[in-house]
Image (cartoon, rainbow, N blue to C red; front, side):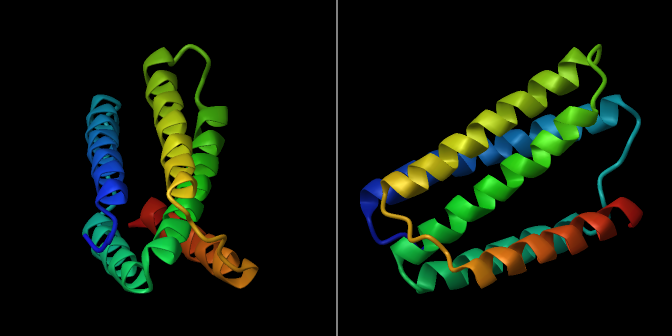
Length: 140
């Protein structure tokens, strides 16, 4: 939404489409397994959009830096889930594996378009926020 470079915007639009696919895959698989998503999902989406807009207002390089770090942390989070999925649950493993590969590609795209490396306190704040969010999501 805030990308100033047309080339970066096109790449980010493609990544956003893949993220939408990830949400659909995850929702379908959760439903197949008889689970449910967190009631807090709308809050997470609104928060992510707001943070993304603020990062975007700081300029493309900072916005891309935030995106790259987010994707790296999401990839690690998905990897931890993948490690817990039974070997025989090939469908879930396939979905998580593809999502991990896509997240890594999104981070690489952000770097290719000039992402700034976020300062360590920002990365730590993101990790803490993520832990709080996932802890709440499991309960609510």
